[in-house]
Length: 412
Ligand SMILES: *Cc1c(COP(=O)(O)O)cnc(C)c1O
Ligand SMILES: [Zn+2]
Image (cartoon, rainbow, N blue to C red):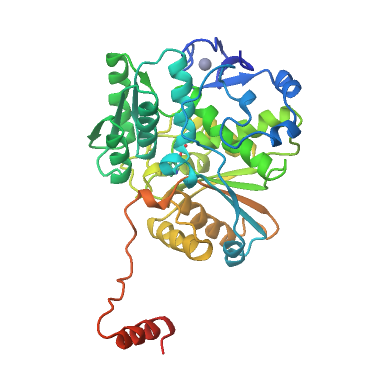
């Protein structure tokens, strides 16, 4: 038995039986979300009891869709550190700046949470294989968790996907295919291939379980900030699982009385070469429109037509947040800045947040006194390294070598 009451459509509200393997709303085709009996959760666990539990994504198990005796397919995802960034904050001129470092997850990105949960739950409900379109990290994570439970997986990625993520899927034994185009093209193949193979379609937010994994970022953030919320939260937005999932976690805790006050102002950050959410928000649109010729080296942001466009826009408006697009050059510079000031080699997607924060500061959009949260979604290690300075080659006698080092370091 779990604490789930039902599964609900986020648009038309139709109720679905949580005991069946679900995809999208059977009435209107939109995104589903798991709902809990929060009064029962509240009666079953206290903040004190939580403190004595082990770290990780299943720490607050009552707010996951798992049955009592359900063994998660796990590699130790979640429980990532919340890092204060004082040197970067000083550089940017903000008072409090934090990063949730999701690069420390298995597979090097927060996709481990979503796919770990989705594969756990869908397998219990009968899935016998998986098919997923991906810009990189999601495919790698799906392949890894499928391997972990011995089920087959098909991964379809656009050409030009970062090789480490493709290799990750291949070495885990997935059937990996590349295709010309973007994740949207891959998604169209998956929509046909999944039913043809009889395997479960893990496309972003086209099933309700991945969101429950991503939601655990919000649950952890609340606890790590001692049951407060930041003023502003920046999220690198592709399909938007975190942008929908993190506030879902916050709202559930708020309904339990564990958190109070308004949600943070949520900001979606995208790349100039693929910014459908930024465009739709600026135009006051209800939904995103497909972005033509999406390009960016931040692969996770190359999502031209996110399925949950409406839900993201609603959240950004409801929290009086916003959306910003940043350039490729600004992303690269921000990536170096974060590494130089705080020692974190973060993924280009999350570096984009720092580039956006620079823009917001310049535009006077964030005051000095705000507490700002960045979601560092992945590690930089999984991407082609940025262009580097040539390293100095040492040669000659020991004395000559020493002189070379000293001159190069001190300039004298
Ligand atoms: C997938 C991904 C994103 C985008 O996440 P969405 O939930 O699709 O918005 C951002 N950063 C990294 C590193 C990713 O892998
Ligand atoms: Zn519906």
